Length: 338
Image 1 (cartoon, rainbow, N blue to C red):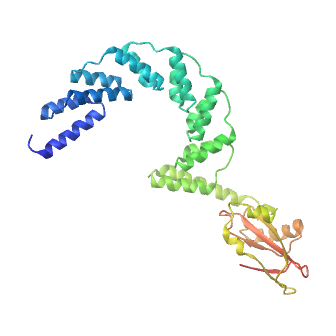
Image 2: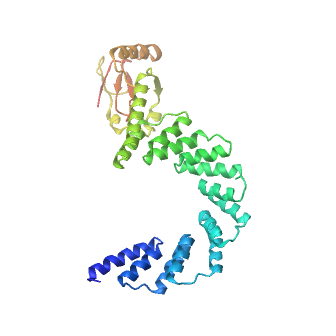
């Protein structure tokens, strides 16, 4: 070999081949470059392959290295794969060794996979055992899949169980998908639950998608958020009176509103002892016609003639109405200030 640099290069190349189970290639390169590979080192790699479930690679490696791999060792690993729930490795090893897989162990393996939310592996095991998985195991699997944001696997599990997934599980799944930057399954989950996702969640999802350079999913999230906002603005304004305790317990309320309150009565100049009332608007008025409608409804439904609309206190399109009654003269003509 020309120099130490070349030797390091080929040694690294050989190690990469050994680590990925390509022992015949590694041995061929080692022989061509004069780099020594000890029998002990090769044997260690062969057993690493067996531990990983790569039985065919272990056998090819042992043949290339001239290292005997007894059949009883292979059979031992067939059972080991089943005990560890490595169904695909067990199937391959069974074909290689000719050892039939015991049905009870296959069923047990399938059950273990389903109860861990691993649908495909569980179904593969039950199929191999020629049995149908029990309904309760499929539902448990579906629940776990939804909880982990595996929408399609969860739906398949419930479909096989001939059951409809609960609304709350679909919403949980949708939220997990959005948090992971997977817009499409998130929207599908919410659609099946007949619910609308929070637009801020969708915008956060879009940001994650853009960071991951998944522009198509980002576009879907942005469009969905805009549709929600447009729909909300198209709906009639709803008014709901709320107590101060309920208002203060809201975890979506911004701190900025807390400094806002009645300053003085414009009739008697009183500056204390006001009785306040609070109302939440489903959205703030956007036109003069809507402002006039709001004035009319506040007078008609609640007897409030003077009030103030506070915006940007919930972090969304809703508004907060604050009105006050002077404790001295009973007037509603009160000035508010922050």
